[in-house]
Image 1 (tube, rainbow, N blue to C red):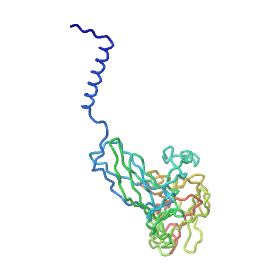
Image 2: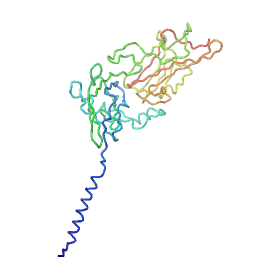
Image 3: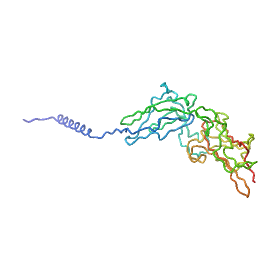
Image 4: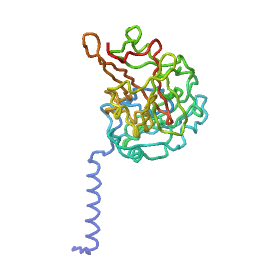
Length: 344
């Protein structure tokens, strides 16, 4: 018997076979979802930033050998230690961010400020694809719990296309803000532990009366904020009785590059600059910082002739940070006797 099939029937048969072959092939294709290995771990579970400054915690997550990148990170269940909500850390606040890189060679305060912009962020957040935690400088102990309070706890969700894992019971226990470093304030109570701090180093300083060596411990350094609205920094020198010492006596100081400041005004009592805050602007080595870029470095120098026509190169060096903007004064007081500036 002869059977005749219509063209439509043959087409339907062909398409059915094609679908079956495609389905069979897909079963043999590799899964394109990324693995999320069990060896991915956080290396730090307690974080104690100092409030009032940008603090970035790095090298705190190890993705291991079995996790496919990129990973995504998210803070969840951020709460006070008693379990109550912590909107002070979960809601967005306006913060200052760098839109263009700070290089240290900017020629004006306006040029530096033009590189920054205001964005809204939670004051404590995790970077989406690195797992690094960041506490923003707008954080304050006036509304964020700080030591000796037990602080906050939170969890972290880590995910990729292959799944997700949860890391639990991280601790956030901030220290209250310290507006400057080195600081004479107790990190827990915020109370002053001493009246002053000291320079980082001295070189070739001797007393004008006794010619005895003047070391860092013989010089008190005071930080004073004159007002909160300005953007200036002044340096002063005084003797043991708080009488001014002319900064021009430090005649070998490179005043134009002492700090990254502008519009210098030097008198016989002080030298003043318009400056961006914080100081230094970021942790980045420049001619204005220590070698690591973590602190500004101001060095005041002079030279004189010692006995036998020996050239004495004298200096006071001070590594420091200032985190709060304002009109600040940094005063160096020689507690025993003033240095000798004249030749022997």
